[in-house]
Length: 62
Image 1 (cartoon, one colour):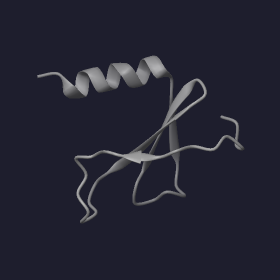
Image 2 (image 1 turned 90 degrees about the vertical axis):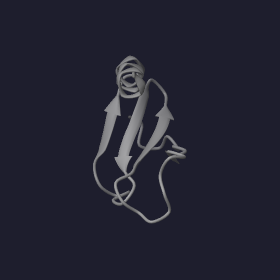
Image 3 (image 1 turned 60 degrees about the horizontal axis):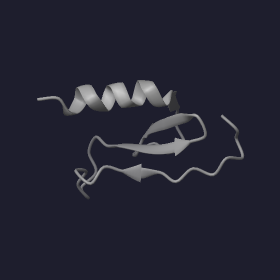
């Protein structure tokens, strides 16, 4: 990841305002970045766009 790349982080609309276990996601050039919303300075996962699409597909499957 280019460290100068500005990222626009988004939290799920399903996340409440009381805190809890939430992630934030940001789309970057060639990758999707995922972090813990409670620890924004902590580690960030960098996933390929295909890996993220696969995860979302499995997470939303019924």
